[in-house]
Image 1: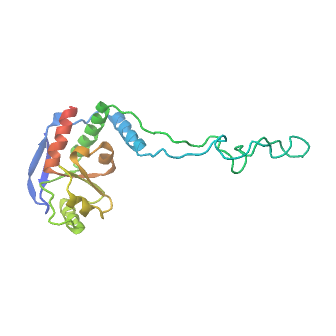
Image 2: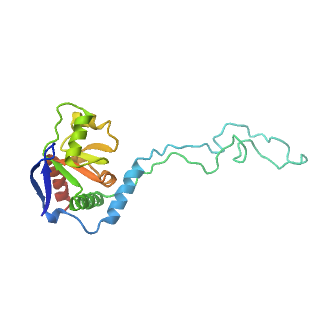
Image 3: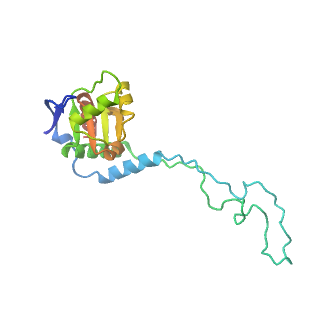
Length: 210
């Protein structure tokens, strides 16, 4: 059993949570992690870059000068890519960068990264993260008491507007619900701060992947 220390918002010990070793994936899955991260970053690309081909540029088909006798190189039309203001020969056009990754691969990647975080002690568990008002200083004090300096990701059982507002002005801190946490965010942040309820949700996700 892997044991996670539970603390309150002031850093005092409040017991432990056990995660069954058979749920952790500590061997294999590196390629799945790579594929999941590449697919995540590719999906964030807009793919909206666009240029005009020579057939799409406005202009006449008339020859700018006669074929012979001028001493200059022959030219057929003003829309040629070699002319300033002409079309672009091999420019970008709107496209989708989405990469297909199977559900099984995504689950394996998530389980591997989360298992590594748990095994390495990078997961801080707080009994309950409840702020009386959405103030950044209150959240910063709680993270300091937990020993979780930014950059860090805060994982909640469900979205809390107070926590979201309090973390908005904290650089390197992101708030996410347990069911929306993905492999990329787990890798991006060295520290994971999760509520006790969020740990139960994450353990259930590990159980589905087992």
